[in-house]
Length: 60
Image 1 (cartoon, rainbow, N blue to C red):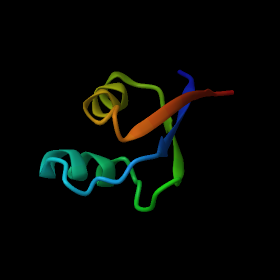
Image 2: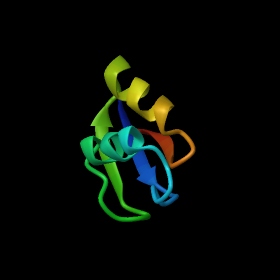
Image 3: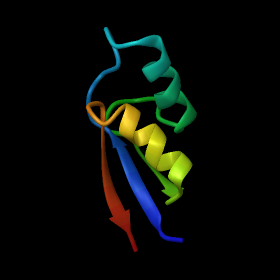
């Protein structure tokens, strides 16, 4: 499986508590921070829930 880079681009202030928990579970703490995860359906589902807060890109 490939890897994806997830970058935290918008603040979670004012959004649902469950969405803030997803951001924390992805390992994101500060704005503009990025993390690399394995590309799996679980991670893709988490990113789909908070797609307005993060951006994703393929990692080689």
